[in-house]
Amino acid sequence: MGCEFAGEMKYARGLEGVTAAITSIACIDGEEGKLIYRGIPIEQMAEYSTFEETAYLLWFGKLPTAKELEDLKEKLVKERALSDDIIDHMRKFPKDADPMDVLRTAVSLLGMTDPEVKNPNREVNIRHSIKMTAKIPTIISAYHRLRNGKDPIPPRNDLSHAANFLYMLLGEVPDPQIERIMDIALILHAEHGMNASTFAAMVTASTLSDLYSAVVSAIGTLKGPLHGGANTRVLYMLEEIGSLENVEKYVLDALKEHRKIMGFGHRVYKAYDPRARILKRYAKELSEKKGDTLWYRMGEEIERIMIREVGKKGIFPNVDFYSGMVYHHMGIPRDLFTPIFALSRVVGWTAHILEYLEANRIFRPRAIYNGPIDVEYTPIEKRQ
Image (cartoon, rainbow, N blue to C red; front, side, top):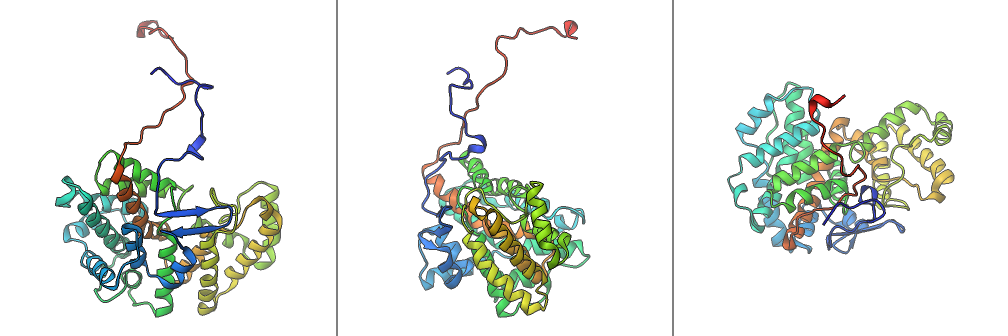
């Protein structure tokens, strides 16, 4: 087949609206503001489930029995610790490195040292999914400790996934309320359809590369500011506004000048992001618990004005608007917000890979050519 020219093929910029896979993992109804995991509404998952149970559901397609859940928890706990070699490598990382760069490189090291990486099959890929899910929290917390001149805190076997991460990161076992809110945040971020990082992971995996390489691709994609990091920018925006009294002028001026209000609007949702609605409740709880409600009250006012001004255009709060407040009140540094996104989303990335590989076909889209034709080669001595 020859070149494809403009006018001969349909072009979807950014692949918008292009169907790339068939999945039973998650469904997003952007018009109605609904998200389901394997058929279960996200509201029910946040209310009743745990991150470990959510991982099982996404990987295996059903809610686990008590024994199946206990077996998965044991496997996750067993894989939490990092080898001395990985820790030694991390000690040599620059102390001012972007934590996403650290995570990308550390996951690559995991793949380099995994003896099963050369012979992947579904069972091996499930084990790799469990290993990365278990070890990414340890990587993030270990690097945070190391960059502050402290030794990493070893993982504990008696804590949940969420509680163990906060313990390794902050040095204290969280109280049950904080643990539960962290658990819910991880559930909400675990999966979200065919987003950029999930697609990147699937493209890599479709070549029959290993799962570690696919997750490294996803981490690199998530690092980009158009995908990860919006919750951090919400906090910077709140700092810039400064006070409740300044909110209306700031928002109206930003809309007039066509500046983006961080944490609003979504490529898929044209209604209120259901994850944002859930996190708003917990942002309020934590703000009150910490005795510092200013940002939450500012957030409510921003939301009120934005819905009044642009809600009719389908612009509402997304998951990032309140998640940054939640992490802030837990005492988590801002540059770890996106790594925490990866800490959770690794489950969704690997679930999609496992599903796609069942009937794999390498991704190979086309491009429309709009350059010249039949240009004669000019010898170098004749070029101007």
